[in-house]
Image 1 (tube, one colour):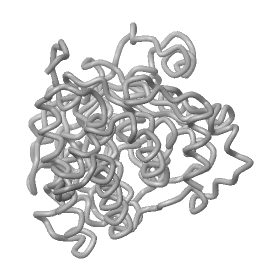
Image 2 (cartoon, rainbow, N blue to C red):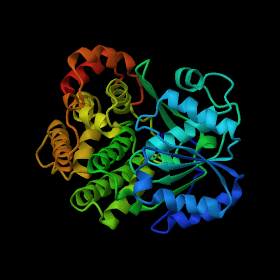
Image 3 (tube, one colour):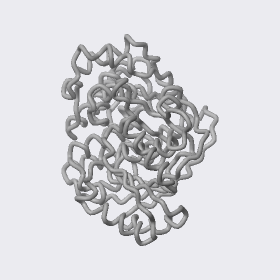
Image 4 (cartoon, rainbow, N blue to C red):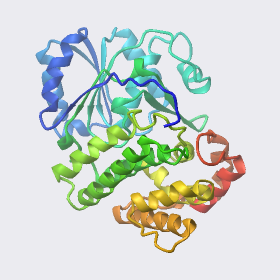
Length: 388
């Protein structure tokens, strides 16, 4: 471990089939006014909405609904949520949904009392929060983002064709998160698989950085092996509780900041994927899967030892008599085969990207410097072309 760091994660998790019952322990800690934030209404069809509403009313909460949060929450929706929170003096934002709903709730929590345009302050200038923050709680219904236990909040500006994530500090982390694996059962298969790859990408983008002997890398290899096994089971048996519970727990640990400690981290797949999402409004996990194999082949020569280790320790590639290049390539071939097996998108054309869009996507991609190669615009363009 070469890095120097301090570590704190203030989110309290309740995990398991009875997790929602613990909402009763949390609600008394907050005032009367609760903003109930959710997506397109699926929670009303599967009964989760009624269960949450029952507990809120049981505790005498005044409920202000903010539904209709889209998969890629927009800045216009953010402004709407801020107005609801401000006008009703909200004491708690309760996000019921997946990562987009949780991201949006955190964005509202820091923006409602911001005295200037929150898009400019937090997503263009990337400044810290200096105003009142509304506490957030999460009832998770889709796994993938890890947003239930981190400070990340991704917002899309359709007019500017930009999709940007701001990773806020521990003061913005959800105060509590409720994780019942059964709440994820009703998710459509496409969204489920997209979430699976989002988890994998979170782990890989931290793993493929640094050259030291780092405990975080050993943890991530274990998380990846668990994820690969459990997702294969879940694709065949979507209501296999053991598989879905393991996936849910892995998703949280993939991005709750633990395995990032001592790592420089990469995040270029997410930067490229988010730029693609800004142009296409495509499902986030699928934008990542579409560019991942071309990206990792592109940077593999710069991090060859780690790619060979990945092939051996995660995919079980036998190194006997092979060069590092051959071992590393076998690992990426195994990963590619797995991705096809679970049914994720393998190229950008499937998402509606055309060659004419590439210059705009390149311009919208935020460059990062923590990985094995600093990607110049021409490098990003090359990856995008190989991803078509």
